Image (cartoon, rainbow over all chains, first blue to last red; front, side, top):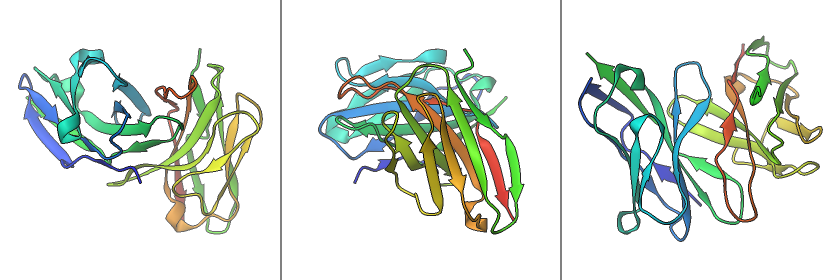
Length: 113
Length: 115
């Protein structure tokens, strides 16, 4: 069965510092990978997605993620965090051929001044 | 475009009561989904509908039923609510193209408490 692991439940960074959120996927062969963000009391919003091609993908709000097949990872990065980035971030994976998506358990980001 | 809408936003039920959560999307998407979100567990798929007229069980279907009323609407019913069903429920939709998976668009959620 698919599984998506986000090893960090909670991360605190200072405003202006760089950020990396970790994600490991399990399905492997042809993963479809996503990062979503959830602000408090809101639904999830897509940040970026990877289907194939260039392993470094750019998303909205200055985020990027790098797909590394050898490590089964799809880590999310941002060079300089803003206070408005405080939210919960979910990594997700779907396999080709069906439309079900498996979500990780989320990483809650706190940004301190 | 409203995107994905859900009603109600909040609901409190007593154990054993029933209710239906409503979801509608105006993006002409074929696929729709119901998830529940619990602290520390991420989102877990309850049911999904790949197209109008079809529904399939997800990871945690017990205690729930769904109806894909038409292409726009996908409702989730709790026949006899239990405290374990206290959660935040999200509806989502997507437009898959063949074998290609597309991103899902989420509604704002329904916060349900069962006492």
